[in-house]
Image (cartoon, rainbow, N blue to C red; front, side, top):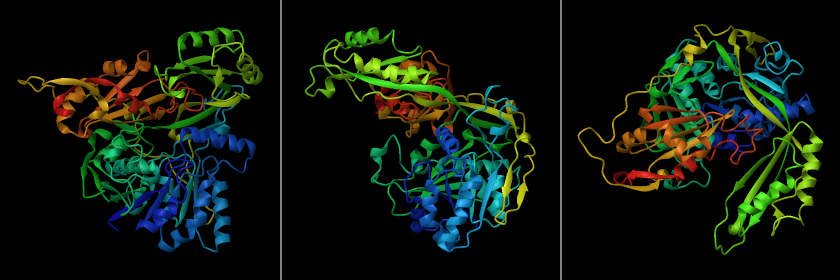
Length: 572
């Protein structure tokens, strides 16, 4: 085949049930991938494994295979997923049991070596007293390629990079060499677009109201060619849309600068040419790649302590005084490190009680579960008849719950085994990738390109008026550990010089006051008409520990789009 059709049927653990069957029934595909492992998911699976060592994998994948495995085998479609999580061998064994129950001959392979938990202290992860809950290196796609080459129908991995789920099948199918950086980077670009499922077909899209049918977006497909170029599409007749906008949204999602490093290659995001290629078809071409770093990223989850929270509802007049009263009444009984946030959701002279109310959030953290638990909850409840008028809570607080802390780490790639267990049970250890470069080289920032001036030399700026940024710009945001990113772009090429010259780090800090005291980076992507901002520390110690409203930063882009600034009328 001159084109390999790689579909996605899962963007996270908990994605739409039945999607694998949808992709098998909807039209021709060659490989179906599923991405299950967000940073938070690794913590969830670690807690599962702590309770039962035979678990630690994404159980919902078994349900998908129960209804789809036989049909996939009948159609010759390979399945490649990272649903193995912390126990790929355990999931592979369960799949063999399922195949026997279904009466089908499925060749199951799995990839392991990413789990560094038992070596965590030796490698410098965790404290000297105890090891973390999980520590997993991001492996690349070559183990997947080797498993497919061994005849596997289903390949289960642990923590591999999201894009490697696509790189592996493409490298296997086209016989790429491990140093074909441009081709590998092209597959990385396609993998990055489809890894989050329906986010590539209109899901979570800023201009969703421009799409005709969004009731049930179809999952995406990447048609990959031998040179690494690809076309992003979906099955005909499915909802949603594939446009330059929906694809751009995913390209700028959860990234940093122009160099997007993975274990297989470094993708130069600033090299991608993007163009419509027909209805619901977007072509990615011209992709350049570079040698990957000689280190692998490690996802580390530790127990941070215990957390409890309560939300007080403040209604009507004197909101600030009411909030001050509650805090003064509890200041001697709540644990140290307690945080208070007042959300002024109230409206004056409102016709509804809910719209006249503000929310005061109180979050307690600590190492003592009793102090953060019942002692904190009792203190909040017991002032119920002795505090502000209209006192009530959104829900009564309960016991303290443990929370996790995510930190990234790095390990020399040669220190991490990459082992394939073939369908016949034999193992293949893969040698370390040759041709890697020092991490400082692979991750070096790219000098900001020269930008077109606005207004153009010899012209004057036209009339402007104050309006929401989102009237002309789209955005998508997300989390990277304790950092957040927000990518912003325009689909009107004439507006690009204005966006590039207007949306500076200083302007972002003005529009998003939460970021003013934080380190913010800006990266420019002229081919995408996009700028990307990395906001360091906005999400604290990661999603699992963060009690911030919008803990994963997913709404950050929409908040930015709702802010007003002076915009030239010609673009409005």
